Length: 523
Image (tube, rainbow, N blue to C red; front, top):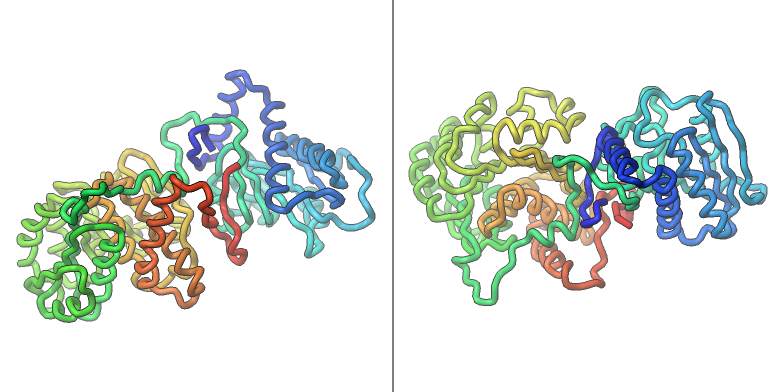
């Protein structure tokens, strides 16, 4: 975490560079270790309360992570814990067992995993893995990992060669998050994550950032006391077809719920009445249609002309894959004078034709899920998932667009190399219509004056926060997209008060099932 309170996600190489720069600037390694160990001891007590009288078993490797563990051991012993330290040398043997204070004859209540940290490569030595297995075999033992659970690759979130990974109840990340803290399966193995500031700043200019409540609250549009609906932004939502009317309704109503002053749904004339009867706040605009009862190509010039009167155009929800509608989508992206948020079948219209995404008049925000992105890039969903952070930035640059790569976690990348990882949301969102809601929210923020990248990352955060608030009421299996739309005002109100009230409790961020209280926080 930087001094400004922003949270970054650094690769192992970026973290080494930041550590090296800090040391060269005059901060000794021993000082960094002392800060890390002291911060970890405080984080443990924040999570579990005082360890006085409890037995803590600290397993230390031979590197800096082990040094951090020794500081934690000393700090916990000073707080009244019964501490045993097992220290391994580089020959994979036990270099010593130190009882800082002789523990009672019972298994450990807490195990501190200080074996391997961010720079680990190759398999975990068997003796080290066995020591962790032996120490954590009791069901009541709580495991605290220093920086990373042993066995995780810091950059991928997957297990190192050999497959052993120590699951943690709490992971104390030093200075900054690492990709393994936010990417699955690593995220699910870290438990609660507490980021401890040790005074190490990033050295580059294109680090990945974690969206936080404070960050997003600062981005949100504010209405002045004299505001009227014309100043609150106009959105034109284009889509809908026979059998897919719900998608455009969700997008239009979510844009209104996210603060847009005017929302008009441009829809095929034969389904206009059904859509009009389903929403009373948004307006509809019946347009010529194709034989499949989706928008016809002859509607394209009318939509492009109307786009001059709006600040954002949402394209794709319920559009269908009819050939005319796909050609209409390609023409709108190329010719729209208003920024476009492209989703669903609007994205599918560019499958095999992604080079056309670069030929346009205005800015573009794309919101693909893995399947849609696979069709656009020709890469498999597996490859995309395994390289989520890299591919989001790669294709945002290639297409010159803001790319919202949906999933767990969603990554928002800008054409200039910036990227933000989103921590909100939950498994209940794995249901139809959620993407349509997101399209509406991002469009509303664009219409209210946010830059495309800020509109996208704020929209993703707010969308997930609304889903978390709805989830708290209805649970996982019964959550539907309409619940999220209905919760948008509550999410926005919460964020609007975040900068003015000190008693607003933060929602858990980056939840890890099954413990709903797990999250990422900063110290």
